[in-house]
Length: 431
Image 1 (cartoon, rainbow, N blue to C red):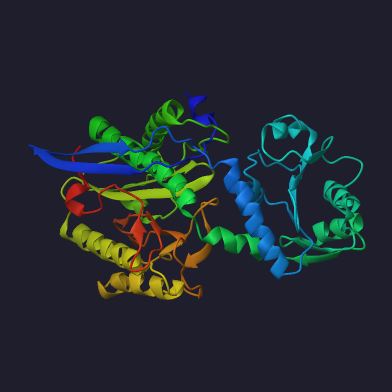
Image 2: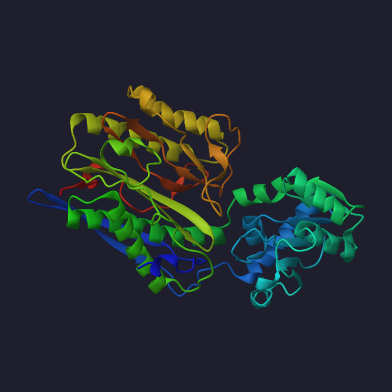
């Protein structure tokens, strides 16, 4: 089992997902049957080298506007975004040098020296290991300088004072400027190739929620850690059978999700417990999936047994906020205004005291990334941006409800990637 939870993370190609539901009742039991269809199963589960070659060209166009002679990226997600070189990020610095023209260069620790030869970037240099006789960031910038860029203007990502000192020691004649927003802002808007990867990931996220529901329906009064283990095994088995290209890391402990129930469902980030599920509880199944480096979320709230009137009011307020958030994630909207319109639905229902967090966050190569659908973020939304939409309502004396969808900003309203149901009548589990 443990080995299945550490299989390598994949990269996704073009797969569209359809889930159709059929709600039926058998006495007191209520069951949702789901038919999941995955289109274009022959597609590879990663963005191809040509995509990254184009991305390097786009970065270089932005560099010209800022008069940068080079850009050096040390953040793993930015290295992956621009080059597609997936690697295990450790204390050993790994960087990509993007010159103002021509192909990029990778600077890697020696333990990457054979693996890097398998990818499309052919120019690379390696150091033996960390920490080494010379600071490795300094080592990288010494080599950047030796490539004729030592007197130029070099963009870097928000360096710490310590790193900046080493960069200047390595390239003392260079002008080093903070240009971290260059790549970050490009990452905000996903193209259709990236969105296909995310849809592929959503296929597995939706599946995991259904696997959790099936386990609870089948097993009854289970614990949170039992749900987590069962869902992790189910999605690990499925991914290991169905993924085509495998390149990355694994499901994170404790088995990769949040599954609080009862009063603990009022803790938005509840850690697992040994409590046992019982009739009358709220249950949140919160899972993500990562394919091709891209993250998505699927969170669903359930009622175990017939919901009380109070539970229905809480659920309806949450759902109204969720639907309002999706509706307003459209081109030209301001992030904090989307948040206000969404959370106002909970306030109008009389549950303002049960609010604990914003409506959503950007999502992509990082599970949480800018911009934020939150008070204080004045970003104007653009088509192709992707966000979670996850307003919640949390009564500490009873429990809470929260759905999370992954939403694409479109012209007139948000496009929900998830296919899992959201209405209360479809979210009742009898045990």
